[in-house]
Image (cartoon, rainbow, N blue to C red; front, side, top):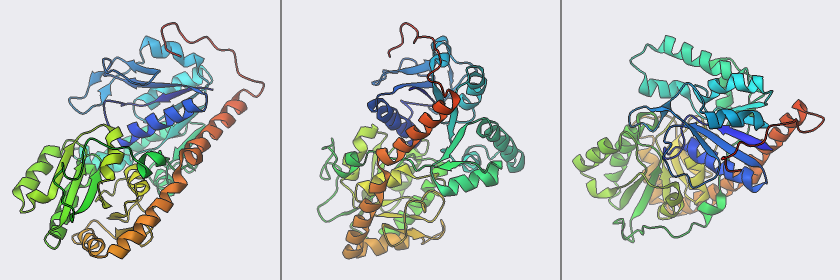
Length: 398
């Protein structure tokens, strides 16, 4: 098949969605398919993978996102040659793709990766909630109702799509990861010694953006609370984001400065080796749709300390592969951090459970299911065989 993947933002912007798309694109290519990634802006970025088609766009400040109202010529020339399109954001690339999918009779797939209500609360709180939610729901519904297949990575997000946008027909297909990369990581650029981690230190690890929707203030409050009882504890913070400087300032102003280590934003390739230096994964986020970073941590044999919330509880069973607090309230995270730090047998048991849970989410089991749906949709649209298409335009790498 000739597959088009569409994203509002892609590298160098780093996010769970970016990493998911990149991983699945490579998997589909390894299965013999021709895959194109359509995105916006950063046209001078040196892509290290084939077939990334970037349309001209205006950057949204330093956010990593760009704004555009049209696909570029290279993208427009490619669209009628595709067999199927899969959009990963509903507000720009998703809505822009709708008339093209109809015009060229292309099966349309949409994956809902994000709790858009929570993100709008974090970034659009100056607009009253009721009209803000109404606009978001309307825009989201225009894409899901036009799609031939809507994928949600967890049952709780499929339920959210019913509650928020009134759409009951989503198919739940969990996201997958490269399990081997995390269970047997290659050596990285850092060692525990280089990061200032002692032989007897116990390392809690957080990986992801440092931004309001990830509830990072709560994470630091709870780590500092736990650190009063755990002088040997360290918090390894992997990632960047708009709150990175503020988080560093909080750590400097606390009495636990030496217990917090920031790596800043790093290449995704460095993540497995860094997580291999840790003992426990911890997050205060309650905005996950699936929690890819949580799943990656479990593949690295890290038990998870988190809050029982959609996306997290779809992956983590309390007492089997991690410990879940009931709500993002004082003590709910820190009490479990202290408990797991003081109980080596519990850590060992949860570590085994985490690895066992993660093993279910191989790419063959997840991306492979997505491919099966692609094939079904293309065959249903064109039961007598592949429709006549124009050739790939000259100058585009096949």
